[in-house]
Image (cartoon, rainbow, N blue to C red; front, side, top):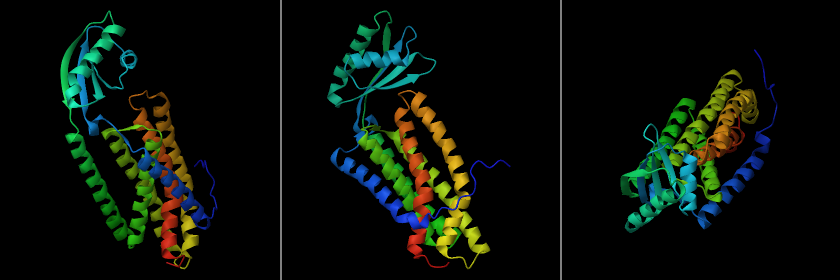
Length: 297
């Protein structure tokens, strides 16, 4: 079997305070940004105008985006495949629906003079549904965190391990949310889905290391916890890096070449994947060691 990364012997537990300090700085920067700037909430949460147009001739997303840019509108563009239609969403108050819709159509008349279009739908998108889904997503995340603590506590006979795994998830989600705030990227329901994906991605790798720790506890019952934790992280380090670098490579390609429509989603996944890789190695297991006080099992 080909070995891409040879077995390492890094003392992660001795460096745990450095890891904690780095995480505190990253999370602190994001929290300060969220407190000062806030989050750039998308139309799903703020409400706005929705206009659906069908074009007589084929038109590309780039042409639609240019027309809206020339019209001075920040628009969320969604293509409807097979219909040559586009849904255009613009933040704004309900009383400005007709005004914004007229401005959108004027932009197309000016930029696509040879391509006539018809209006298929004009509506106001209220934030009620978005808020309801956000509440359900938050409830689902809290419920999943509780489930993780219970599952890991029973599986490894120690609630400390479950709590460490959940804190590592919080670490990844907070860093990702902070990065979105710092870069002023729009947060919509797609980003909420990305955050939930990041949570699942993070705990999966953490469970792999915890499983190895449990196996080593059976094989070396007298080994000090610090040595056992270091051994377990080093033994799974190759698997963690290869798996996560594969994911990072795919997400990076989406971020660079995926286009503007999924750019925010790809950015969130990119930051979350890197934070998840870091927390798996440098946060979850060191937290277990810190809380257990370095004692033997």
